[in-house]
Amino acid sequence: MSTLYLDHLATLQRQAEQALARSGFDTLLIASGIEKYAFLDDRPYLFQPNPHFKHWLPLTNHPHSWLAVRPGAKPLVVYYQPDDYWHVPPSAPEGEWVDAVELVVIREPEDAAGALASLVGPRTAILGEADAALPGLVPNNPELLLNLLHWARGTKTPYELAQMRAASRRAAPAHLAAREAFLAGASEAEIHRAYLVAAGHTDRDLPYTNIVCLNEHAAVLHYQYQDEQRPVESRSFLIDAGASVNGYASDITRTWVNPRAAGQEEFAELLAAMEREQLGLVAEVREGVDYRDIHLSAHRRTARVLRETGLVAMSDEAMVAEGVTRPFFPHGIGHLLGLQVHDVGGFMASEEGGVSPKPEGHRYLRLTRPLQAGMVVTIEPGLYFIPTLLRQLKASPHGGQVNWPKVERLARFGGVRIEDDVVCRAGGEAAENLTRDAFAAR
Ligand code: GLY
Ligand code: MN
Ligand code: MN
Image (cartoon, rainbow, N blue to C red; front, side, top):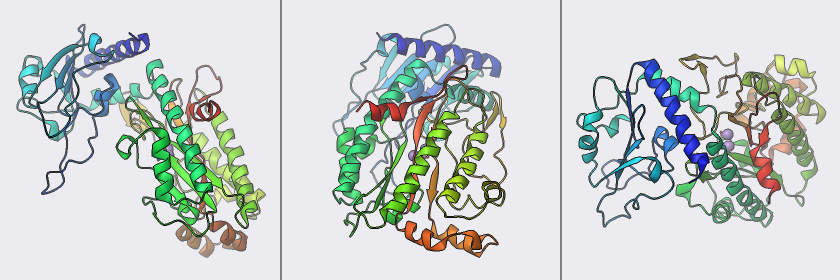
């Protein structure tokens, strides 16, 4: 059995025991979650497991199961495996986790209440969504306990890093297949399908809905459609797409330019400048660095790009001070990544809770903690030509400093985002770049 997984379980057990003791509980029950149905319909939505459950077990498609953590004992898994001829029920328990736990198989969701009844008392913490409640088994989600667990989740175990390396390796060839499709003139929907085939995923497996943007669509941060229609001209392509491995996500963005498109040189120059700054930002990921400072550095770097490419005629300092970089870079530099694409705990002031504030005027930043060794974060600077934000800039006192004809030419390419997943290492060592390593291994 893999010691990586066993060590991971041992770490979680230790963290949970400490968190239980500190928060005044002695038993932890975790509901995997339930399937939800469309209103007035019998079709379920895609199942989203409780991340606390898949933290312990590589089980991502297992509604109505439970996990019990008791100090000094093996984890107990109440495994829901119905007799169901309408659907494929979860397979019989298998995998390295089986030998590491005590196992009870149930055939009806309600049977979990009986299987866990002896563990429920006034000092039992039950983590789960309200809908997962069963008689006598009602989630109470104690705040301090959740905070302690969420803080701990910020740093990954070696097992988790192995899953996340694999998630980047799964996505990298799919990104390259998507690029090929783009260069061949494919539609957004066709590119999306090429991505899925190369990743060996269906839509159901993706950690988040792929963002597949041709041309001006790259200016929509979370563009949610995929046109079936092929574009008249494929100028630029932005794809933000990941992959999943045992419940862990990658979150990767690449922007490409068609070397045959008219006027592509200016966009290629912008893309190269952004690539340089993105690598510079990745190099800023070090233990102890305040992630907010990396976000603010991204604005200084955006200013440099805007000045060097002749888009804005102001000093870098003035551009940042006057907020001129913000319409071009209107999101955060990144976030924690792991079991969730935007992983929990990004704003915590300490392991017990509280809020570490965002820099004023930077409301979309999702991580305000100092970096710790073992954290996985994204670094995803962008520079976009977003009509509604540019209109405001044009009307502002600084509108006269912007090269609007150049903006108009570049707006046909939408924008740039480059996003890597990086692991903060200990002792001031440079970060491990999961994404670039995965592309390099191709
Ligand atoms: N894929 C969403 C994000 O990059 O945060
Ligand atoms: Mn991201
Ligand atoms: Mn992304």
